[in-house]
Image 1: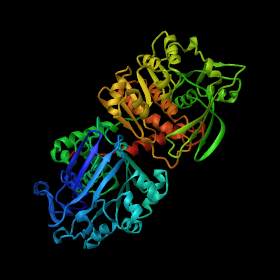
Image 2: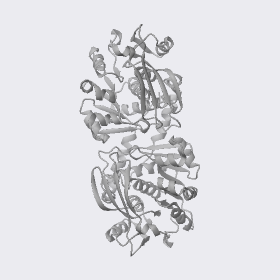
Image 3: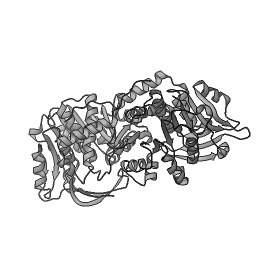
Image 4: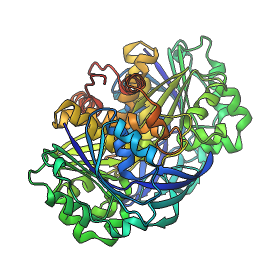
Length: 307
Length: 307
């Protein structure tokens, strides 16, 4: 089943306690595409790049079933550029540079051949653009998943509240859930945020895993304890790609299947952080993913006889 | 199977964002006893109290199968007193007062009738006293579990290293694991700490759950997402009591069964934080525990077909 993904395709410069890289492919849509395409195809990308985005990266994505008709190439501008430095705990980072470049004029157009897709992944981007894309779709997708961040909670809350009413699943991290709801308890925060629209809420806690809320139900997926987190850039987008990729592959958007989708997302994210940029996502095979998923089963599996 | 517990019996004064209480029963051994006695009896307590420790608290413990022969009562002194205030996140707290009182002269004596116990739970206390108790046991228990804290890492590292070589399971929190090992990655920290003696290591992460390490294996138990954490005091000791109580009840100290024991410990801890002090541990029934354990199964249970 087709997945439309909206998001950025960019260059990143990254510094972590383990190393530094001056220029590597990044962007939310890039990570979503590399992750999701391991599980389901086609991925129908909507994004914008400048004249500097590498041809071979485009070819690599196409080879993996990622359609790029919806990616606008602006000939006289540069691609979006982000530079950040991670703290030792890897859960916090400082943004050093944000050069919007082509992103400043982004006006996403849904190509005719994307119409009819069953899944829509709205990557972290200005909420008005996310709304714009939903409104262009003649048939509502079976599932719309939204990613956003503190920046939009602070600067575009009205548009964000509008898009929240149009989506099925929201993905945010724990501090964003607290910020959006004004509640410290994540259980209370989840209830309030679901009251704003999305029937399903995923709260990401980085190395501490992720929670899935729906009605009065809650499911917890751990993060795999790793020897080293080399570079967390794109882990959230990769998680989103794994999540929606699994749902599209299995053609099942039930709460039960979303539990599995979160485990798949966590497994994909655990690869992402092993190297700079999306590098590991290009290297891994179906077999690697299977082995990693088995590790997740091992990690949380227990037998219980009640007391 | 009998469980010997060494630890404090005390009065606490507690302030949390939800309320304040000037005097309530506390102490590591108290929490361990209330938790473990739901699962296995007898609990053979080794502790020290002053002339102010309530008779009815002693009777309540006895009624629950807690033997108090090893609890010294000092007639002319007061019980250990601790006072603390929790921050909003409930993971950090300031200690306001520590009045050692009777604890200053504590010289634990293992009563003759405790000899032969299969389990030994060494609650958080001066490492030299923990060693002292191990040395008094004529037959080594089948399993020795050690709890400790940053204070002893900083002030009694030599004794702590000695006792680490004498125990099977160590329980510490994530920051203590980092402090003890000098490693930031918990996977690396775990390997180093297990190199110091204990074959099993439990790293507690508060609201983020707990990890069990053994050889190259790792198991993760989540904490139950709660509406409110009312008072975290004693949650770690309650976790320890649930853990060792389950092992004693099931007479099985395998890694597989320790996974279940950690879930039981987490379930008991999830009750503990619902009210001030050990109050909830006195109220709950076997049925409450069963229902809570089912919630843990629901929380982490998922089906997976590999990719």
